[in-house]
Length: 180
Image (cartoon, rainbow, N blue to C red; front, side, top):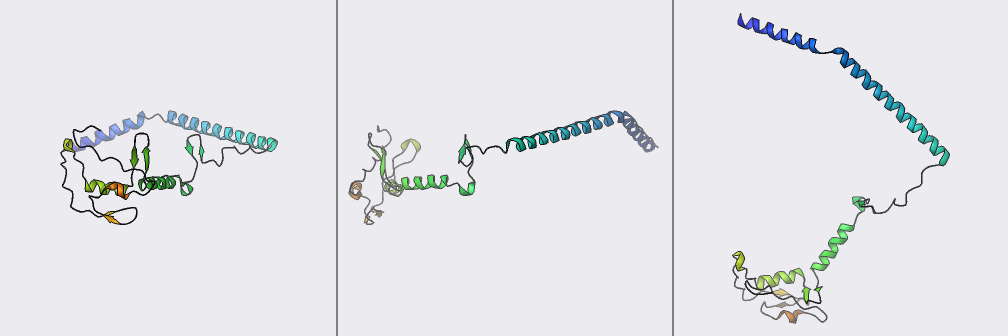
């Protein structure tokens, strides 16, 4: 019997909840929403008719002078498929990484091709005591490619590999405790 009275209590609360809903307020809100929507449609139509009249009277608007430029303000306007600026930047960076040149001529700082720099580091590893890296013994002979294409021993003077007009090789990294 206890279960029977429980179901009658739940149906009574459901009936009370249904009575709490004010249908009049819902209808008023719905009608007001439709009126606002209708006013918006009439207003949009009015704007369209006025714009069409302006176009008939004065002709279409001029094409702005910025159209066709690759950048307007700070916004890129170029399609990704035709934008080659990244490719140009990467080609310039690859050229710089693979060539000799001056970084700061006044201070005597030059750059060397990345391959030559990696060969020098392998041949003469830096002593980085502060980081717990001890210098490794250089191999007795490390073949290295030169600009002329010949192989040289690791112990050869790097200046002999430079062709005429090429900048000098940079100084090796200082060992821990040495001043730069």
